[in-house]
Length: 452
Image (cartoon, rainbow, N blue to C red; front, side, top):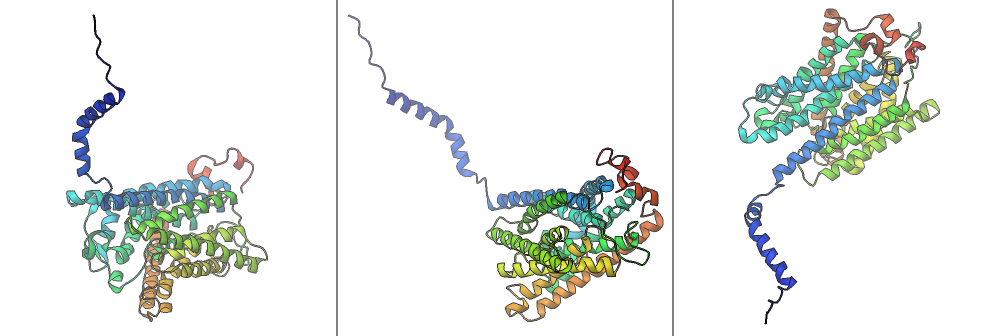
């Protein structure tokens, strides 16, 4: 007789397979136990890169806002300048701007090391690359603010020079005063830091600098053709696409969470609070500008309301990590009210043509946000029992940024005007900068029939 072996039970086969698999994976599993993939350092890098990407996306927001608030015949020129600011700004900031802003301090005024990221120890490179990228998108933001105030009449070739000097020299020098220690610690600290100046994410460092340079550029350029009547009365030149501008504001609002919360450069438990303060201030800015425009003009103006959102965002940028939620609402509301009055004052009293309100949104509201830290900071603010010490430092800082940015900007614009010419010819402005400066139209066939 023939006998057969009993078949191996299924459970036994599974057990054998699991043992074999475990044996094969044992070296890999043992190695995995020794590796921490998301250490605090790696989490900091991850968060900072994500935040930098959000800030970079703000370039799209600025492009939409500026193009929407200006005329169709120069929309492409606006976008060209946004691409230029980010591209030439990043290169200049890599070669020398970063070193001027964050290198070893010289007299509290300027950084002196780290050109093209030279001299960085091997172990410090991962964080240095990350920190440079984060700061480069801030530098580009400062330059992009300038383009809005000079829209529709600036020679593109001359604006290239403006962008280089803003991102490579003007912005980094004053940035060193307030943020110089962020890379090398006390070895890079500037003179405003030594006084205890507070500007967490850049109401003055970024926004006021861009706004005051924009004001200087608008003054040197002069107003757009047809902006003022012979007796000096201001005429409105409506933007061609308010829905596009509205989309731009929402994009900027979205990106601002990277701007403010990302300025921790640390994945910690303050991120949520900073994001909350940022959004509350923007919402309050909308309400403030809407109410003020309703009061001033009889109807809630759309463009003023959009600028109110930006004003609230700019205003809270300095104190987003150092004030309470309630204070954020007050700061944003005040910024919304202020931006409407400022735009009217600059336009109608000073008779300076700022097509997108850059000086008011970023310059004036940036100064307000900086000063507000001296009033509302939980630690040291006047309204929180801190006395006038912090407020005095904030006033000094806001004043220093105005004097430097406006002064340097005015000298720069005047020099470029004398050497290269700053403004396009009259017929080019009438034709539109898209065709005159770039040989193409943003809207095919539109400019064949209209100069508006």
